[in-house]
Image (tube, rainbow, N blue to C red; front, side):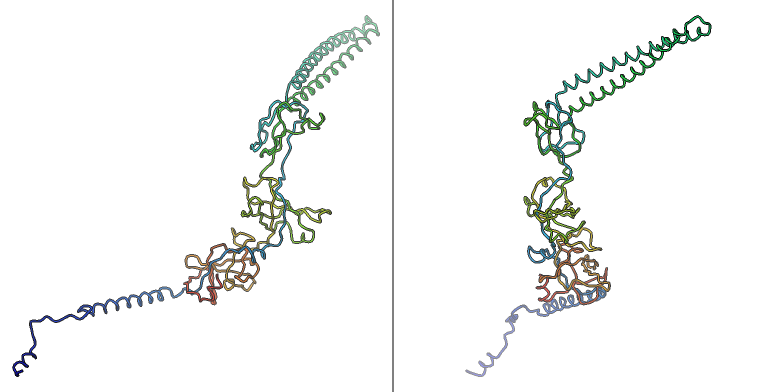
Length: 426
């Protein structure tokens, strides 16, 4: 190869276009975008730190429900079984003995005080009332006759008295006219007395007629229909085994309560006003808030128990008399507890969330809208899952956890909890 050929190989071809490196020919654009993203992140973090200098870093935990074991048993003081009873119920009967003419109610009907429940055959009562009315009319006629006789006797007696001084009328005649006058006046008094008696008998007859209508003594629900048309009812059951003693039974559903028998050895744990929870055997998952009305001051020697009356705080059509019930007596709600908290059930929060103030009051700080809300709480037993709070905190409330002092109304910022704390909260 000649020197010219070698020089020709070393010559640069200016007509060939240069190749672009992989990834484009402008790497500086990508660098600028990354730089802007980093600057924006740094700026946002700086703004967050500058705009929230007064926020206290805290961890958070949610108040959870007490499980079926452990804390739930610790919150309860005593369990007892009993029945739903009505403090106000009546077997309604007639005041007189008679045959049922009509029964106007059925089981389950709601009745109002004074409402007509049944009617008895009024034929005898009507006859008695008519007889009494006739006796009143006769007595009124007797009074009018006695008044006329008295007027005549009075005129005759006054005339004889005027002639007595002239010696025309004998003394015996004057005495006779005076006796007749006194007799007429007494007869008028007797007639008026008989009229009063007849009028009283008429009132009794009318009351007996009114008693053939049986009315509800108070508002309630009919639970038993005991009589049918054609049967004889009597308040004293004088007619034998086939005579009904009542028309129906009415129960005032607003007076329902629970009566339970508590063993003598545990009755010192129960006192008037303490909270309780009632579960009906028919609805075992339904918890009804209640409290103790009274402890009956007598014991049953055969069972060694004392009866306790428990008031139901909820009124519901599902609650009916004679239902089986189980009552759980709970720890009293401490003073200062938050209104609306479910007494006795309680929730579980981390133990670190509960603070004790100088006066011995236990408090929890709940986070709401980025601020702390101080709440006085009533504590239950300490469990492995955390602290049981009986009052002051509701299920789902978010509580603050911090080693720093907290105050009511302070602003907070949430920080990530460490794994051990997270496990504890759960």
